[in-house]
Amino acid sequence: MILRFFAALVLIYAFGFVAFATTLPTPASETKTDAVIVLTGGPGRIARGLEVVTSDQAQEMFVSGVDPEVKPAEFAAEFEVSQRTMNCCVTLGYLAVDTRSNAGEVAQWMKEKEFTSARLVTTDWHMARAYSEVAGTLPAEIRLVKDAVASHPDLATLFLEYNKLLASEISQGLPV
Image 1 (cartoon, one colour):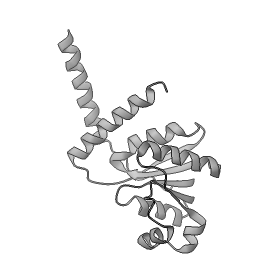
Image 2: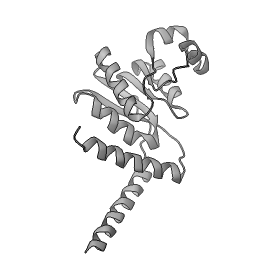
Image 3: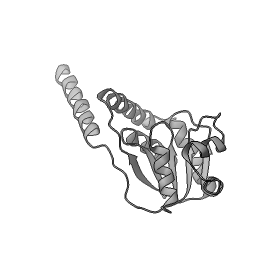
C-alpha cells in the first residue's frame, strides 16, 4: 500500500513536470494595461517591456530587481532609452533580490501608482512562479496579464524551475 502511494506521487510529479515543460506561456497579444512590470534576470525581458511602453500598450514600466550599482543613466544607455522615456515612463526598483521580493516590490509600486492593471514580463520558464508570487501580493481586483519572453530552456533549467514552483506553491499555502 505504501509503495503504491509513493508510486502515485512519483507519477503525479512526473506528469506535472511534463505539463509544465510542454505548456510554457507565450508573449501576450496587444493588450492595453496601466503598467508593464519587468523582472530582471533574463535576456529579452527589458527589451520587451520597453517595446510595450513605446507602443503605448502601457503608460509606465517598472523594472524590479535592478542591481543597486546600476544608475538610471547607465540603464538608459545600455537599453537605448531616451531621457524623455526614462523621466516619464520608467521606474527602476532596487530592493528585490529574488522572485518573492520582486512580488513585494511590485505590489508596493502598484499601490503607490494606484494602477488597476499590469502586464508581467519575464522569461517563459519563469512565468508560472513569477505570476503566482506577484498575483499573490496584489489585490484581487488588479488585472495581471502574462507576457512571456520566449526562450529555449534546457532540461536542467526546466527541472530546477519546476521544483522552485512547487516549493513556492507549498510555502504560499503555509500559515504565516
